[in-house]
Image (cartoon, rainbow, N blue to C red; front, side, top):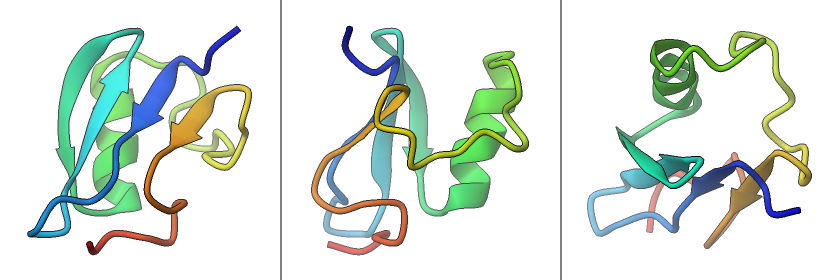
Length: 69
């Protein structure tokens, strides 16, 4: 099964598009933004989910420590 959340590679300004079950949540510029998008989408456990869990998250163009292109 593919991860439900995809964080795309950083754009020229350092933002990363975030998709959840195929829906666009927004452009995150930090882990705080990512978690806020998950909260708004009513993702269970959004505040303490392990964002490095490869079963749930797919990071393209660097992991959660990468917020610049």
